[in-house]
Image (cartoon, rainbow, N blue to C red; front, side, top):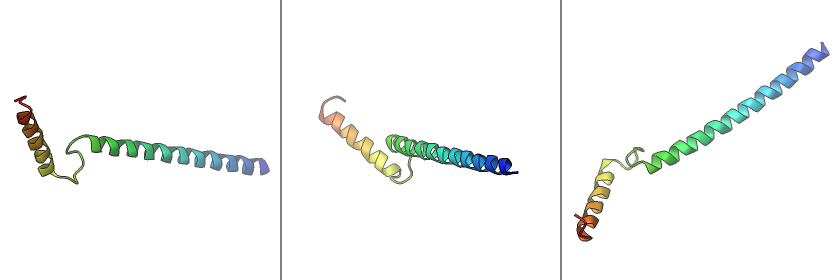
Length: 69
């Protein structure tokens, strides 16, 4: 009976440790996804399409100014 209780306590500790590891993994993936979304233009919905168009317009003006186009 006491052996079963000890085994159950160890099992609970093991499951708790797995939960902590899984949560840390999910948080790390979430941070990486947010970073990737920030790197990809227009991926996050905050700035909207107008800022992307503004950025492309400025880039076009720079190319014209430098005589590339």
